[in-house]
Image (cartoon, rainbow, N blue to C red; front, side, top):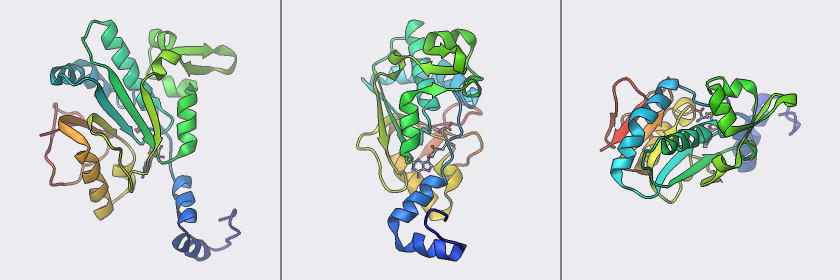
Amino acid sequence: MQGLGCKMVPDYLKRIRSNPDVMHECRLALTVSISRFFRDRMVWDTIRKKVLSDLVKKNHNPIHIWSAGCARGEEVYSMKMIWEEAEKNGLNLSRLRLLASDINPVYLVAAQKGVYGKTSLKEVCESDKKTFFHIRKSRKQFIVKPFLRNDITWQIIDLCTELPNQSFDLIFLRNNVLTYLDGDLKEFVFQNIVKKLNPGGFLVKGAHETIPETGVSLTRAYDQTNIFIKS
Ligand SMILES: C[S@@+](CC[C@H](N)C(=O)[O-])C[C@H]1O[C@@H](n2cnc3c(N)ncnc32)[C@H](O)[C@@H]1O
């Protein structure tokens, strides 16, 4: 409002409604990038113990994973870390191709820089910190190592209006549209995203989110997790 010289909310609403650029700026200003590595521990444990071997059985090469609304990249790099770890432990994984998208270009720039503070890594064990990050002690910063950045495509996508071209074996849809949208728009956006899942593909939702009733068949993949499978 200040930037536009609007003193009263009704003036601002008028500007938003008459100018799509102002609307877009407003939507960006309302985004929240709070995240951390391995947020929702149970999800990541299940990915480690079950989802990876189920993905192997699919025999897809490469495996396509999409982090929809990736914020500053914590979710994306968490997935890469698990993949690297599993390969090191001898699991015969295909190549991983990750799409990391967000509506907010500022977050995507930060994600590509891959520089984090201590709190983002509170769920990362000491040995993983050493394996996957350069540690800049003077500034208490952790910088993602270059090998973790391979095979990630970063893209600006507004989930309300666009979708990627390809389909995916796993989609992370956590703590964004299912939280911030409601009603018909939430259902519409969700259905479109689920259409981008391959049959037998996995959808991961946030810990406190409810998935809307849709025509698409999704069932909980494993007991008590936020991971669903498309039939
Ligand atoms: C709270 S963060 C969640 C990050 C990560 N998925 C997680 O769960 O830790 C929400 C992210 O979703 C993005 N977002 C919100 N609405 C969006 C939309 N319509 N299209 C694309 N990204 C969106 C925000 O910009 C923000 O980066």
